[in-house]
Amino acid sequence: MERTEQVERLEHVGRMRQNVGSGSPLEPQIGFSRAVRVGDHVAVAGTAPIADDGSTAAPGDVHGQTVRCLDIAEQALKEAGASVQDVVRTRIMLTDVTRWKEAARAHGERFAAVRPACTFVEVSRFIDPEWLVEIEVDAVLGGDAPAGPAR
Image (cartoon, rainbow, N blue to C red):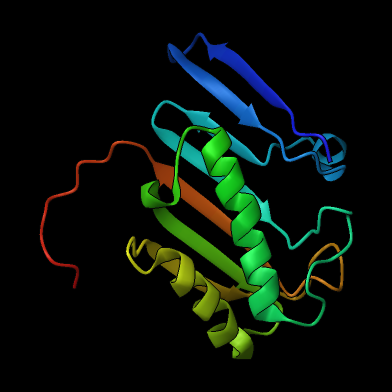
C-alpha cells in the first residue's frame, strides 16, 4: 500500500493541516485520512487490522488484531511528527466486548508508561466481518502536564 501525505494551509485558523495516508484503498473511496495533524493535535482515524497484503491480520485473534491496529496507528503518528508518548486518548471498538481483556493486554503492552484515557465499546460489526477490533488514537504534542504520580 502506498502512503500519501498532504499538507495544506488552513487560512481561517492560520495553521497548517497535515493529512497522513496509510495507502489503504478505502481512504480515497471514503474520503478520509489515516491521521490528521492540525497544530499540536493529531487524530488517528478508526484503524482496522489490515495486513500489508490487504488481508485481515491475525484472523480470529483479538490480541493479534489489536497489535496490528496499534502498529498502523503508531506509524501514522510518526508520520505526523508524534509518538506513542504523545497519546492522550484511545478508543477500542470490539465486536465482542467479552473479549476486552485480549485487547487490553495489547493496549497495556503499548501504553503502560503513557496511560492515556481509554474507552472500550462494543459495536455490532465492522466493514469486514473478519475484523474483531478497530482503534482510534488522539495525541497532543508537547503537552506540559503537571508532574506527579499516576493515580
